[in-house]
Length: 261
Image (tube, rainbow, N blue to C red; front, side, top):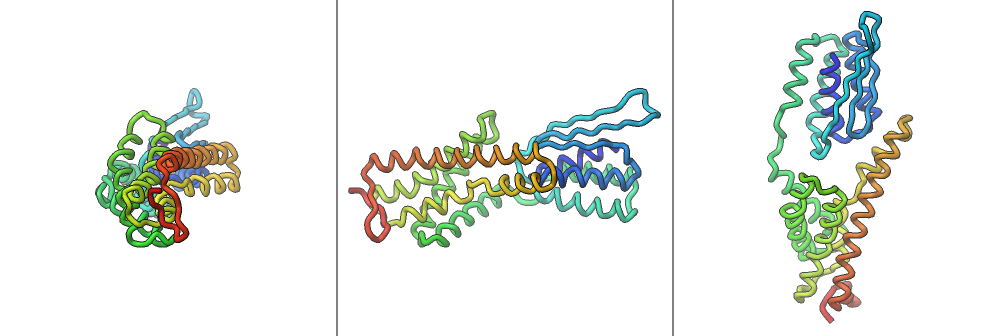
């Protein structure tokens, strides 16, 4: 039963939802099978399950460290459906554990190139939305493609995520600046803003507020710190690239188009 709780918690943590929601989900699973004595504690990257039972010689504690580098919302949907079946009494423990193991080892629904394509389309849409036009969108997509090709692989190494985020922000600025330096008529500010928007830590900030309102102050502060570090990394990366842009004498004209002086 504790193994089933760990699988549910891991799947939901990888969806990067609030830790209080993860604790509630594991609690629903435990109560569905009558294991009310299992205590649950969830942090941003750990699940701790403790069982205190008079039939045991000593309390039992299980700890699992979770890698949440890859977001898997499909696992969240499948776990929620399974929990509903458990609460309705339609699933026994053996079937539930087997289904959870299948969920935990299931491959991603979309291939890697589909996620990359969605990211590029998101960048293009934001640039057009803020007034960058088709040229700005095209240049922004080129910068986003460079981020996917050069920077994203760094996030899978031991390099701190903040450095990869700063490098991504620098590339998001460098692509429009390079186009302007080459004399391409581009609305540089909208192109930069649209390229930086997907890097902002909106999800971590929302999760921090949710945890705070749900009575999980430590998780709330941790996610708030994560959001702050990410935002600072984006700002520093963009500022560093803009400093180089300024040194190249790329100035803004009255119509908002950047060119070389």
